Length: 204
Image 1 (cartoon, helix red, strand yellow):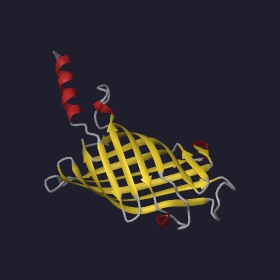
Image 2: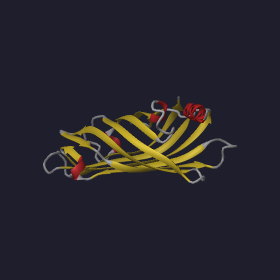
Image 3: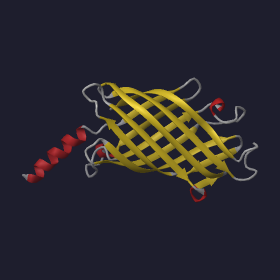
Image 4: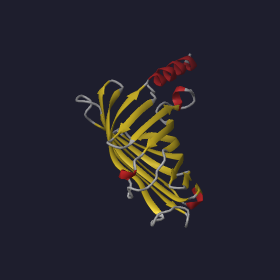
């Protein structure tokens, strides 16, 4: 009997675990991403604690430190474990990414490790809102091809205007260091995208 009750509770909990899809834009950049809740696929995983994600960014050189850079699209796969701490709406997480892009004739690939946080603003009677951010870093030992170092961070403010759908306002910064003579520019360390963005986010 207890086993049956536990199974029912687990199924009910997983019903509230949702995947996320989003599209972010500004005047020059386009970003598309999706995050899948592992708890929906594996009953042994607590919902809303473990996520697999993908991301695509088509950046414009005007949002880098050098308008003349030749920047190709950025691709990313990611894994994140997130857990609420206490009952105050604050969650912390740890994650890992695998990314790739090409800047000028140099290939960037890295396996950055990172931390994330999320804070649900206590105003659900008005409209659900949250502030989220992340910081990822890869030293030389976790970089490949022409890359020598990677640093990426972002922060965003989300507002759920209707159930399971809303808007997001954010800022991101992506930076890379390359090996000597691997990139045709005066600077070996480059900020290849720093920009504010606006987007839509849906849960399904």
